Length: 140
Image 1: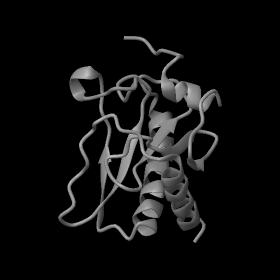
Image 2 (image 1 turned 90 degrees about the vertical axis):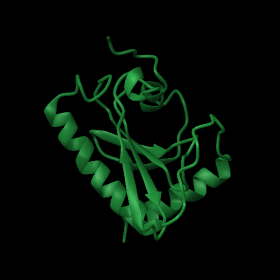
Image 3 (image 1 turned 45 degrees about the vertical axis):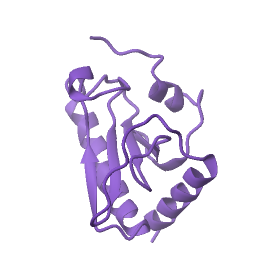
Image 4 (image 1 turned 135 degrees about the vertical axis):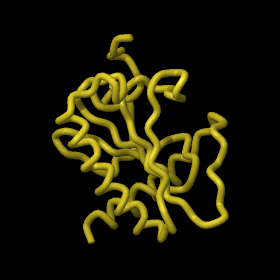
């Protein structure tokens, strides 16, 4: 399988589609998932082109997971979460839907299950508020 330059995350990285940005470096971008499985659900993506973990360069993976840790800490703090779920899927059989490497960071709370993936988009204002909470926690 090859990388598709027209995937939704590539379009976000090029600025062709909007996102609620949470964190950015020269190597990664983190933004709110528009179909969250929980409040504060963030996606962290490398800026380098890679379909998934199977074709990513080791240095790109290192930068990606540095960012996952930074964003995870801020997200957990921002939402006073009891824990985090970190997910990464590879190929259709593995649950991957968008074929640009990405990691899900989802705050978790005791007794609260993940929302089902229904394709329902969250309200723009809600996502903007969640992004602001996480950005504020990054600067503490």
